[in-house]
Image 1 (cartoon, rainbow, N blue to C red):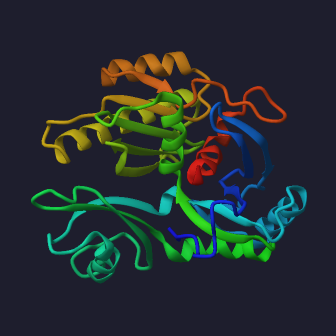
Image 2: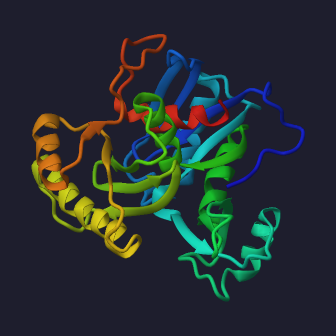
Length: 312
């Protein structure tokens, strides 16, 4: 959500560190073509440190980040990180034709809270020009909750790191998916990111993020992976139908489904999804990504890898 300050340049080294529900992860790219990591590592977070994207035990998180700063030599380094999915919204909105693209952020700063309502009372947001030459121009608002982002920024700063750029996981994962799959602009890609007790579904068209929804399974009394994946299947279909019929009047639908996450029964899940969607379903990573210490980095690093691709 923040732009790099003017003194930054492409040669400035920025480290990639993600604070996720279960761990703090760090990766560094060695090359993009072929995609290879120079480094990947993680430090587990004790249960109860994070809850629904919020930091609920700052002292425990500080202890892990202090260890990370020493272990990964992050002290005084700039870091990019991810805003938690629970506090991110993507919205396609119209704007008047007489508003220039370089005026969009100021325009929507005024509109938020009066004609444009977001689910946070303290939004931090970016604006992406979308259909600028249409009869009714449109832009894409990507917003998060500023007080939650500040929790993450404060946590990094207390461990002597310099928080610089907040990104969102759908954009990070789409960068990695594009490298792996080479989507064309006319495809409509549903990206399903499966966590232990939730999922985030985003949809991209013409390489633009057009929709995002986080679905929490914690209240569903899911007892095993089979039940969780059945829920993923059902909820994904609801979202695909919303995208087709509510956003595109039935004219445009999802053309491909990409899944991120550690899914043990992949072949059965893929078959079930393809039967329901009647479009190809693929894992996000189809060509294993090697690192300094492994021939294939586990899927739980994919969000961090996609984030590391931000400045490439």
